[in-house]
Length: 302
Image (cartoon, rainbow, N blue to C red):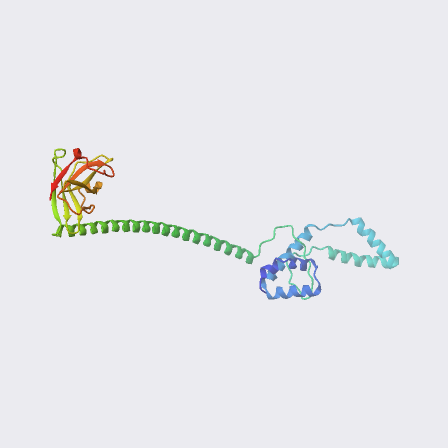
């Protein structure tokens, strides 16, 4: 049988105990009970329950009714002489029938429909059902516990993964910054070691006598780099602007960044084809079309 529990819960065992099945159906139930201990145990439980119920709800007929029925039967089937003998036999049968019947479950005989009284008392759950229920509960608890453990581990691993990804991102950003600085240092080193560049010292003027800077100019490639040694700090709306003077004409060489103005390495400026003098002035942020001579901070000749 594929599913014994479905067979037990189908209600056919109760129909068998109540005598509602045909002879063929009764035989089938008895065969299943003989083949499967679980079905046999359930059938005995059903029969016992029906027996208890019948005993609890039995109704005793009035004594006068028994006498009237008995007298009528005896008068119809025999004469006055046989009445006493028949009455004695009927009394004996009645006494035997009135004795209480044992409620213990009896074995099921082949091809015999057994009807058991139904008990009003609570029926005990078969051990097989109870075992299955306990096993199912334990399995459910273990499953819940396992799921909680898996979720906790997954959450912890997810947090660690996010932290690792953030750390990797920070490391990548730091690496890019270091590589950029390294590239700038290598470029500066090439400029400083290149004999084609001329170093032009820029000294401070009366406006900023302690200011110092220098310009590295390559007449062949027209490349210009500025290297600040010391310049006064400017407000946020101002910038230093480098000028090249070629035959007395000022040529814009670009504005200095804040980092360059504080002395952080060389800055590549605009290319200058020819120049005899370099100077710096203070201009509005973004630079000016022409130098503000009154703000000239440093100046130097090639």
